[in-house]
Image (tube, rainbow, N blue to C red; front, side):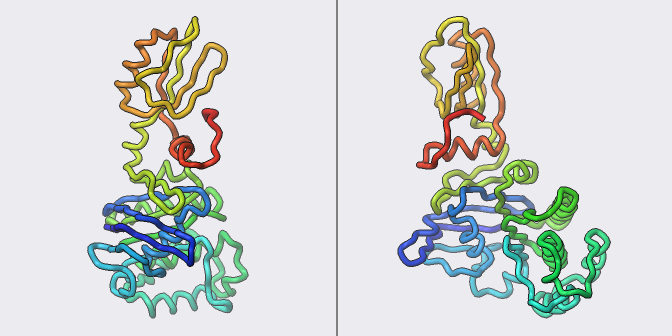
Length: 297
């Protein structure tokens, strides 16, 4: 389990993180989303022990991660901007990882080679961005990590490679009870893979829930009226859009409560639809001084 409690971090007069609290359960995939500059990468660098917090704590399985090599041995990190030694080839990087991670599993690495066929003799710097990501995942998964921390992990990968990587990650979650913390702008992809989601804005966590709970608390309500509709009392409305006789609302609340309130208006037609993670992200940030149109997606 990863626990971040009351985390603060500033750089000079810029407050990068403010009172961040998150919990990543065992054997789960936790997705963190937010606009550019919201603090996602700064948070990740604290979780993997690169940055020291100004205040607060980051613990992995109950132990502090900063300046703790024993804890870091259980963590694999794939950053957005991948770095390898300038002249290193894959065999060089294997030797380096073996010197740092005593549990590095060469047998597993060899099993991954056919999935990502690469020339192991040429310098990795000559690889494309996607090929470098292949190498990073092969090395990270061969550490046999208990915790896999990913920052924009699929950027640069083609759809086939994405599917291969996620399949390997899910295998670790299912068989080894590993935990995954992933930041991505691809909300459609996160919706398919995450158990829990946190939304960041200006260095704060504004919402943290299981994905199922998040999607069961906000809906798209569509109604049609023959006459001008009555006032929408009793509903927590986040957005409103009208097309002819059809009115579309984004509303927050329990499904049965929303339907009961909507039926009181005696509409000709009523339809209640779940929102995608991307739609939830947009409407949750819509009231937080974030420039988002009120038009319903």
